[in-house]
Image (cartoon, rainbow, N blue to C red):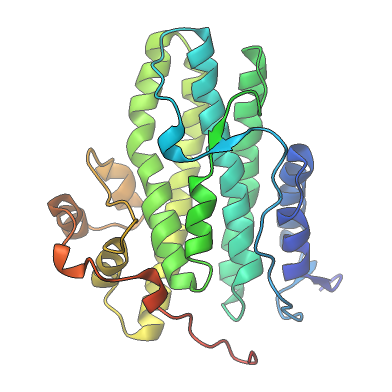
Length: 288
């Protein structure tokens, strides 16, 4: 190892950054440091931070308070690109939080989520540049805070995090992206649709990383993955995946045809009293 830079501390510094350029470049920097063997995953863990750095703008609102927009004019076109950029910005934080929050996992876990953070930063930069070409910038429209709320709900348990962020929220992105691309092309925005080709390709890998570590943690606890996923989905307040599914992308990311059929049947009311908090985080060796 060329230098003993604490992996967790380096990730926290970027996670805490509120400047959008500094966060994007920071995510790329620590991924490069990992590839150069300059980050130490064996270093002291320390206490994770609970809040990600966010810029003063955009103004954040509850998802239910966000306006529904049709792609029918320049303002709504820009608002759609802004919403996509906001998702990617939050995804940087979600990936970095997985690195700085969960200790005691194999080095490959941290490699995967540092790579994901760097790719999400690239996606954000692409979308922000496209938004600027439309005469707007990130922060010019309100945005919702729902993605980070799920990070808070799963902060106690990496298994719940892998299930309900990559396998639920990010997998939803696989489903809706082709339709957004069709709308953008129909509106005449081929450049925006092409950016989503890059994002869709990479997001399959991100969901696959979540699937891989979800299954790893299920094996560690003696759980059947599809049953554990359905149990977590039955938690009150957790949205159930809904069709149409991008079956090709989901299968490439680790879902099985049997699981997709199970998801299509809908939530089992018998599990409605299950809470995320009932799934404790396993003890990490060396931690109290």
